[in-house]
Image 1 (cartoon, one colour):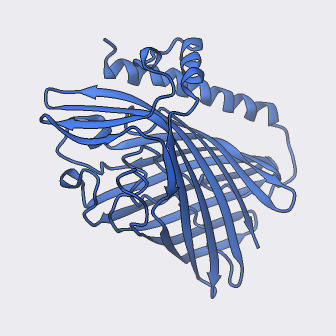
Image 2 (cartoon, rainbow, N blue to C red; image 1 turned 135 degrees about the horizontal axis):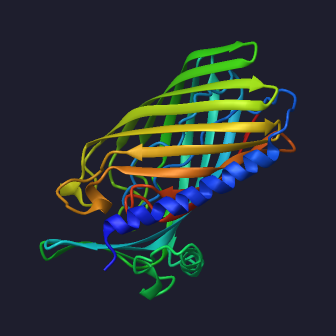
Length: 349
């Protein structure tokens, strides 16, 4: 039997391979160029586990506050593939399926320091199509399959059993509106001095229970998140160099999903860095973390802090559109999907 430790160790070559590809791309592009005004910004994504994404962990950790009288609109897509099976003497969990989350976000600048906005998600669960691709990927790199290769392909099956009682079951595909969030932001610091741009902002969000919690499109709880977001960018002859991060807390009312095991408080944060060798492209790494959203379990899927890595970059497209492209890996195994693909298209008006 493949142990949890073996799976964790096996992830390291996979992550290392991704980092190696990114570094190779950076080296190929490393040549002097004029100062590139490509600001390094965070990926707008969060943990897509079906038992985590239903809560109000904010995807937006940018320190950029929309200018007064202007609007910014974005459409993101997160496609995540889950396969994890774990058991103890008292508990058994099985998360096997794919999720698709599209989020339409809008922000509007109010005065010189504030913005208001809304996030509207649409969520689809199904068996998907990624199982064969992931199995072949693991074979190519000699990574353990963790049972995915022997399981039924392209199946949707989410279940959790504790002390002989079935606590969660979902095996039917479906889609619908998720939990809508209302957002606000306040500029604390925004200074541009020569080639440096430093920003600091306070963000808040209120997630409303508008999604169907039985179908895992919502939690049934009202959640409030507050976070401090910062970024530093340096525009040099070698391009843009940037770091960014955020730290915050999430408070949740009692929801409908595993309600007696749900935590009412959780912490979260992000950290990332990037390089933009030209005005139209950047390469980025980002870490997303959150403390457990559940207690009373010995299973990593429920009661272990999550850490995931997003690797990718951004492209400036004609018309001043910005396209984020990222691939996510669960650094803390089983606390987030095995792999997720992120696309984000945004524009300021």
